Image (tube, rainbow, N blue to C red; front, side):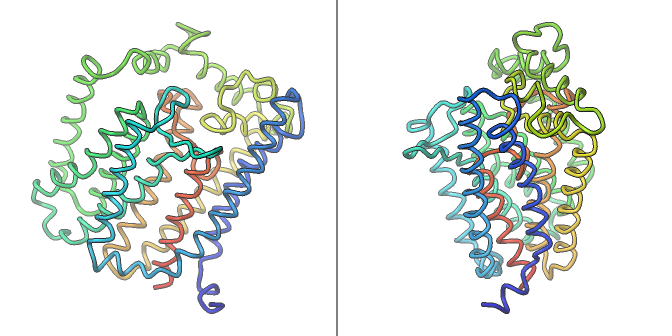
Length: 368
């Protein structure tokens, strides 16, 4: 066991824990310092303790999964298909048993714990696409493989869309397109997908999207049109980011965050909270941690001995980086608000546990 533990990529694990630490600092500041009211402070302190617990559980889960030989997934389809099927069952179950949180029925509530299945669905999609394209990498010129893989993604994406989780649909689509590009999709096929996507977006806008989803897009284009309604979140977020300056207002001293003007400061808009209290320097360090984390994943990908492993690492990298880009983009007012958390940083047990589970698979790839 000691030899196995020595082989783990502790630098990769440490970089992930460093990212989690940024979120913990923000949660601690809301719960133990600054301008927050007593009731809100107690809630934030409780969230801080829960996030620490999720971190500890995630870390040990990563180590446990690292003992699993990923080559079983490479050589056998049944475990991946079983995981994919179970993911679909969990998403279908939400239609009956899901609880409504922030306008989306995307969670199960078990006692005092809420579980968001889509975070684990992302893992199954990464593994399924890696398996599919690693078996057919010399046949990527055939458009039918793009259609078939797209259907695999369409099933869970449709169920997620029904639950009003448009952001997660974007992530699943990003994983699909990103893995295909790395697997070797032809440029003309990619162009066809882009055109088809534009057509679907147009149809969705006119016949599928609900009013609140349209309001989010309209407020992104012109938030000042409804500053107290649909444009409120974007305006408060950009104010928080801009007011932080170079050095920030100090931990626990951000007025937008601590006085409650910034919505979802522990989850969707935690980047704005960090920018307000730690400033441009804190943001630079945070982004540097993400860049270093991405570099370590690239190192594992380059050292992998087979296409399946490389595509798994690539899929996980795309998942993390696309979520990071969308979250920061919406925080800065560059993208519509989608409710995507900042990976490793935003509060949330389902997200953190699933990310460390995927890190466990990467550790297995690195070792084997």
